[in-house]
Image (cartoon, rainbow, N blue to C red; front, side, top):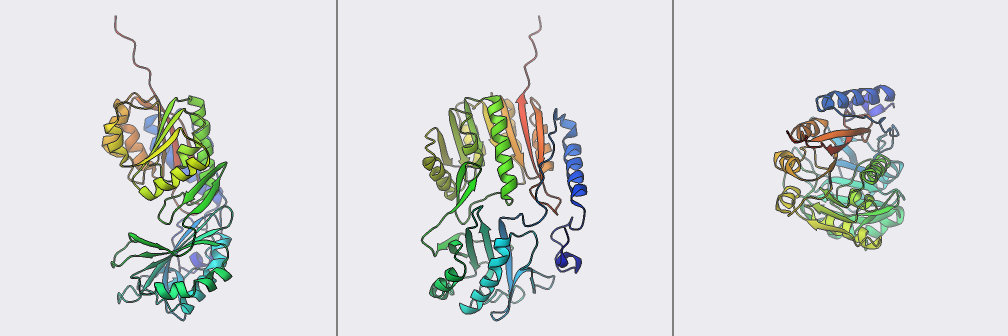
Length: 381
């Protein structure tokens, strides 16, 4: 993939830009296998490949410049806006929306936030696209001061961007390196974005986590479903379940499925999806994954974990190692923390693994491993 922004030195976010895709893929696969080699993965399946460009469903863009000439992209080393509206890894839907958003900034007179002087209002725009082409647009502001003007001109925005199903304002008053704040104001009738993934409908709320690459997320969930059916668990947990992607995809493999997630907002979305699908045997609850496991009276036959980059940590790994769970399905965006966690669970052997190229043009990957409890040694006579 070729990118003018990268070639000109304006943006270096995609560290592998310009490297032929087969070479990117081979390098990532080689690194993953080397990282997990000490753990003895029995079977590496072929990597799941992605389209090279236009793969992102979410664009997190910094707004700079001025009201009259806003930039949508990133900031340079001096805190000045660098416009990246034609970013090649963003979807066509994103790229079509950016000029409309830029014009709206001027129409609603939303002053871009200036990092060096700590003045202004609009810090970021976050744009998420569903497989159906609908959009969720979020304006991240320093305060609620521009909200009345955004509401006043919202009709203009929706007329020119009819695919915008959800529009919100997020308030981030602090001057800090954060993408969003805790307060969210929904400006449209709809507050969720429907994501049709395989045969499952997921509902994203403004601050819900979802995989960045919808096509690869779909493949990841299909693989999890296949592996779950192969081990045929009676009971399953989906820890760090988010909006329920894994739990809802393995619902046909287990008679009882429980999903746990710290975000109450994500749990509300997961419950909505389960209710719409008539899956009464799939239940969700808001809570900490480790605390839930440690407090449980017994373990399920299958535990699915999809933690953030830091991994599941020593406490949960120790619980899994000592538990009666027969299988663990671990999906990770950080092979290093995955390897560390697996090393802490020696009785759970890696039966098969697969790399999913969730982030082409970068060094990041998603790796999923199916662990199986080793048979206990025979008693000594």
